[in-house]
Structure formats: C-alpha cells, structure tokens
Length: 543
Image 1 (cartoon, rainbow, N blue to C red):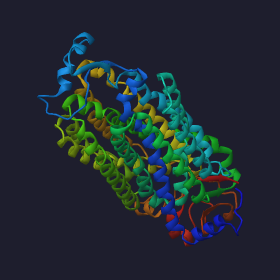
Image 2 (image 1 turned 45 degrees about the vertical axis):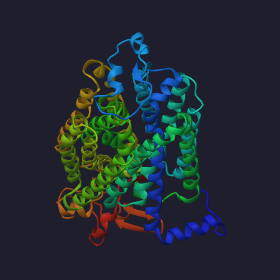
Image 3 (image 1 turned 60 degrees about the vertical axis):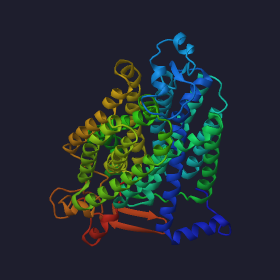
C-alpha cells in the first residue's frame, strides 16, 4: 500500500486517527453502515416504483386497476370493484378502472430476485477471496464499487424496455456484491472478537435504514416520475464513494503467524474442511430460509396492502419508519446480547439468540399478514425488533468458524447461499398467489419461513460449533466454559512439537501498535500471556 506523505492533509489525518483508534473505528463503522444503506436502497428501490415502472416499460402481469390510487374503506375500495372484472372489455367499460400492468408478475419477481441475486452471489465468493489478500486495498476497491453500482442505478433511469432494465439490474448485482465481503473484512480488523457482534449488528442497520429510505421516495413519486428516484439515489451513492475514499483508512490486518511446517502445507485442506463444517452449512441453510422471509415481505408488502386493504397512504406513513426503528433496534440488541453470551458461555451461546428470536418473532409475522391495517404494522414492528437479531449474529458466527484470513470469503459464501435460497423463495409468490391469493401466499412464505429457520438454527446448535484446529486461539470466554484451558491434556492448537517455542506467535497489528502472545509447543498460550489471549484473533498468514 502506498504511503501517504507526512506533510499532506491525509498524512495528518492518519496520524490523528492513530491516536484515537477506538473513536476512529466507530467513525469507519458509521460510514460503512451508510455505504450499506445506499447499497440496500438501490436494491429495494424497484419495489417502490414497480407499478409505474411496469406501465412505462410494458412488462409484467396485467389486470384491472383503478385509474387513481386513493386510500378508502374496504366497502368503497375502487381496487375491489376493479379486481372483480376478469377481462379487459369489462374493465375498460368502467369509468374508474383501466386494464393495465399491475407491477407484479414473473418478470417483476425475476428483476427483484434472480436477476440480482444470482450475479450478486456468484461474484461475492471470488470477491470475498480477494478481500483476504494481504496487499489488497479494500477501501479503494469498495469506493470504486460504490461508484459503479451508483452508475448502474443512474443508467436504470434511462432504460426503455425490460431487457435494458434487466441488464442494469444484473450490473447492479455485480457491483453491489463487493460491499459486504469487503466491509465486514475491514470491520473484523477494526474490532476485536468480543465487539464484532455489536459492530456487525450496527453495520446491518444499513439494511433497515436503506429499505425505509426507499419508501420516502413515495413522496418524490407524487410530483415526478419514477426515473428521478433512481437519479437522486445514484447521486447519493457518488457522494458516499468520495467520502469513503478520502476519509476511511485501510486497517492493518490482524494475523496469526505460524511456521510453514505447522500449517501451510495443509492450509488448503484445512480451509476446505472448514467450509465443509456441518455447522457452517446448516447455518447457511437456516439463514437462506430466513432471508427468503425477509425478501418476500420486502418486495410484496406494498401490493399486499393495496390489494387487500386498498390503502395507499398508510404504506408511506408506516413503512418509512417501521423497518428503520424495528430493524436497527433488533440488530443492535442481537449483537449486544450475543456478544455478552459469547463472553460468558462460549461461542455456541450465540445460537440461542438465533433460535429464540425467530421462534418468538413467528406469531408477530403472522400478525403482519392477518391483522388489518394499520395495526398490522405494529405487529410488524415487534417482528422486526425480535426477528432481525439474526443477521449480525450469523455473520459473527461465520467469522468465528473460519480463519480470519478467509473470513471475507466465508462471509461471501454465507451471502451466496442465503441470497440464492432467499431469492428463489420470492419466485414462489406468483404461483401461490394465483392459487390462494397474495394474503395466504405471504402467510405461508413469511411466518412459515421464520418458524422453519428457528428449527434449522436449533439443529445447528446440536452440531459441534468448535472450529477445526490450527487457527483457533483460546479466549477468556472459552476459559469460562472450560474450553482450551492451558492445563488440559488436549492441546487447543493441534501443532507438531518439533520446533522452538518462538516459532509460533499470535500478533495483533491494530492501528496504533502491535501486541504479541507466545504459544507453547503443545499448542497452548504461555501462562504470562494467557490473560491477554481474550483479544486474540484467528486468521492465518502463511510466513
């Protein structure tokens, strides 16, 4: 990485941040969260403009709709009158109805789901690998990706047919795939293991804030067309890219240095085994089911409320703040509680947060679909506060299950699985809607997925969550529950004892300084350094 001249503004900024490393870590977390906010806003914007978009570009399912969308009671709802007309002749004969695109259908679900998620997840894995390369400047790559996905958002506003919009949607998925693997890799270097649950929970605020912000564009749609929503969103992305590039510093990587004979010759094998860990695979499957519930509701709650309750105004009134408040509180509480449990009872304790949160959230998810508006949004608020504890906790577990040097790759693998499963769940909406209606379709796919995810998390809990040997160091939390004590006969690090004690060392290089802990030949920390092992991390950098 190129050095910054000491006389430059950036050089003085770097020295200032090194003296205030903890505060600067929070600053970086804020801007990475804002980056994720822009990422999710651009992703979900299509759900807000879908009806106008489909009418302008001529795609999707056609049906009979009122010419003007207005909030009204169910008894006088124009949508209910128009929906009873099954063909275009009857619809066009009515003064208040028109036969037009509904903003739903297979083409819309493809744009919202596979067109984005397939390319997003396929690219996330190689990008996750590159994020772990020692010489890769992650903040520069991240800044460039923000510019490129904002460009795709801007180009979407100039499309004139479904094919052009599909191409920009694929490009959006390609460049947005950089965000989470690179951002979480940087956060893993900025924050210690006992703080990562909270840090990742705060980072995932971007999902809920970004999704809520998209509903604020409803007010823009009142006075202009859908194209300006994409142009404004792209401008915000360009501004964030400049701030990240100029003010976010590439963190120094935490590393465990082991001799080559101990681990390098088997590194490919051990890392492969780590990704084949049944606990990791089950965690990904459970996360995919849970992601499907979130995506299904996110892309379909607007047509659900309009079709079932004929109330357009209530959508903007509640959806502009309910996901923001509920999601951010849930993500923060989930990270905080899981970090506390991690310190007291070991890393398997994080699983209880996942199991209990999804089980408790399930009946409130039922209320989102079954309770009339606006009271269903109160149920939605509780479902978010409880149910959205999952994502930050899952990311923290993934990082703890893998060497830190491939943690970004692990996050990419996790995102690959959950987004592909979740994206495919959205494709079940059209056939189920045709058979039983949108209300009962969502009842099956949303609270049903919550409950199924809780069951899968419970199964994962009974799988051994201990990581494979060679990269794990003991922590104070492990000591508290009897894992990896220095006096145990089973060594924590399964390394050969044919080298000198100083051949193995754990080092932390974190902004303002370095700290080293010796490891004995039997794989245990030396007594004088054992207390400091609570700040150790897990990655492997091959010497």
